[in-house]
Each structure stands twice: as C-alpha cells, then as structure tokens.
Image 1 (cartoon, rainbow, N blue to C red):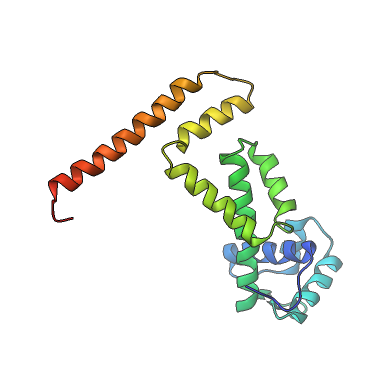
Image 2 (image 1 turned 90 degrees about the vertical axis):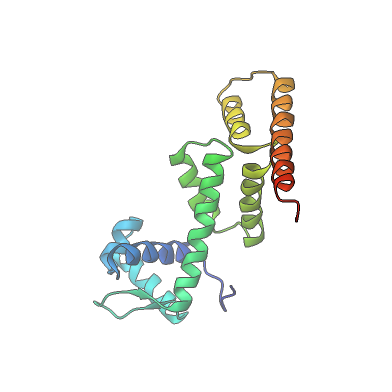
Length: 180
C-alpha cells in the first residue's frame, strides 16, 4: 500500500483512533477522537483537515467522520503494525502487556512493513518448528524473569523426541495410504 504523501506519526495516531471508533460506533465525532487521544478539539480539527485533504477521511465540521476506502486501507496497515509489534513483545519477549502496548504505539510509526512481516514470520516459525513452540517461549519467559534452569541438554533431547514423533506420525500416515 502506497499513499501519495507519507503521514506523520501524529496523523497515523488520528487515523488509527478513527478506525477503532468507527469499528465500535460506525462513525466518529471530533469529541470521540479528542477523548481517545487525550487532545483538545482544535488539534482534532487540524488533523481532520489534513486527513481530509489527503482523501483519507470524510469530514465536514459538526458532522460525523468516516474513513474513505483509502483511509481504511491506511488505518488497517497502522493497526496491523501495532498489533504485530504488541503481540511480539508479549508472546515472544515476555514484556508486560501495558509496556508492550505503549512501545508498540510508539514504534508502529517507524518500523517498515518488511520488518513487521519478519516479526510475523518469526512467530509463525517459532510456533511450527519442533525446536521452538510454546515450550521454548515459556522457557525464554522464565529466563527473562530470572529463572535459568540450565538444563539445555534435556530441552534439546525433548526437541529431538518431538521431531522424531512428528516424522514417525508422517511415516505412519504414508504407510496407511501407499498411493502418496
């Protein structure tokens, strides 16, 4: 997704706020945005003018605010970056949810889409790889919390056993259906 004029972090925050409000209420009002972002009404008005000029919102003073199709696309991209970062911080790095939310909100504006997608692929890899998975993430979380079990040999053997079980399961399925 490419927009003609890059948005500042502030305007991305506004479009993300509008997206969430519209999802909840079907339309937003300036006061809803001001409350969500903890800003004054004049700041909202300025941002709405800027977003409207870029064709991202439907805005007229004292009327409801909605996103254009392009605005929805931009907002979904910002929300996606935010959610990926937050979830990575919580699931993989074992960061407190409140701290992760705050960091994701600040970082979502600076992290390129290619890197966000690497975060997604990394989490998918960890979830699927027999050397990773939930056990691996839990062990990392324990280590971050100060616990170091120091039993890498047992962990590696468990990974080998899981991989062997996965492979044997696949071989049994092939033996039961020899046409494959």
